[in-house]
Image (cartoon, rainbow, N blue to C red; front, top):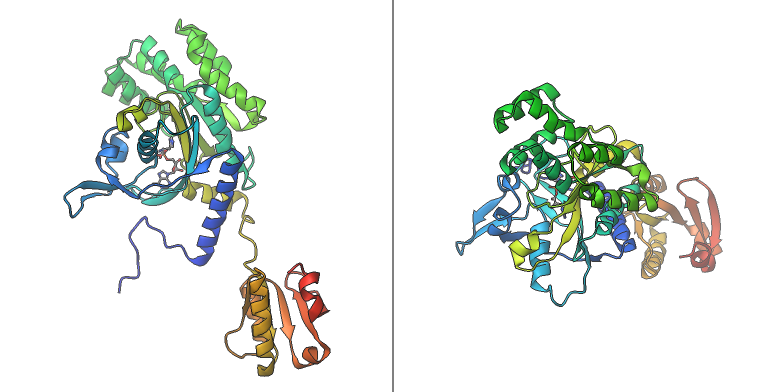
Length: 429
Ligand code: HAM
């Protein structure tokens, strides 16, 4: 008997499925508020879709195999290449900018740890066809709102924003080559988690830089606001223009009233290889977990994957880390009661009346249950409570004679006798 599933894969028991559905419903309502349309794609794609542009890290985590036709295929580890492929197929016909969202299940063979599994669901929101920074600001705002919608505040999470063009310009101004810059990014990315001195040594060794040069590289990661950004650009004799889009994006978020949620932070690098401009991540405020969300601009990907040259920007927000943050800070964010009413039959003779009422209520769209075998009233009330019913409706011989039912509010315990003819109207059923 194999009672355990695969490591890193979840079983969703009904309470967990209810929580997941709740999360997806909230995400969908936020996406709708921003005018995004939902799309979906296949969970299995040609392997090539990921090896071209996603970068070594994700390629090393692919669930890949040859299908019976000998094609090299892979379970999708992310949605962005599928989106790029799909948009390219209809690029001419689609009105730009395209605002699309999706909630795919994704698969990565990762080392399992807190917040990191081998499958997860991810809200993806992307705008295709708009190169300006207002598109990036729009997505960062949507990401922030998709977390706020669960009751989380600026005390619980932060968005950190950077721009790869700015980081690249600053590093190039220090005389680094593209291959040294790639190594520099990997080290800047670890600034928050690892000891600085060890990073200086490792960077010096790997990129063949002196200790002083490595220090200077890592200093880029200490730029944490627009003022420091301007100072860093001036210090490198670079024009303010280099940071103009990042500044415009941050200003737009401030104008939306979201300044409290966002920080400029040039230490945000992002693991995926295709990002070309503004990049961002959302983290829990204590930074005790991995990122809740990551995204950015990827202006070259549609050309590589679909042959159409369209700018694009977007993000992915995973259900695993967000779920942990919600449970930590808003434990009451659980889906409400499942049942409108649990019907209770006092005797066997009352059962046909319970069945009749149950069906009438279900016809009206109410969620209703009753005990599937005859049992004591006490047991039936216990079952009603266990099913999180909002109300119990009791029918007994006395009630039948009087043409009434007893309605008990299961939260307050209050009871009232209601005429059967008034039941639907009184409770809005
Ligand atoms: P990503 O940074 O690889 O970006 O993933 C985005 C989010 O998905 C992460 O912040 C994390 O919450 C969640 N996530 C990723 N891997 C795992 C895992 N193994 N277990 C649990 N959660 C995970 C992307 O995937 C980009 N394609 C996002 C994007 C869309 N960029 C532009 N558009």
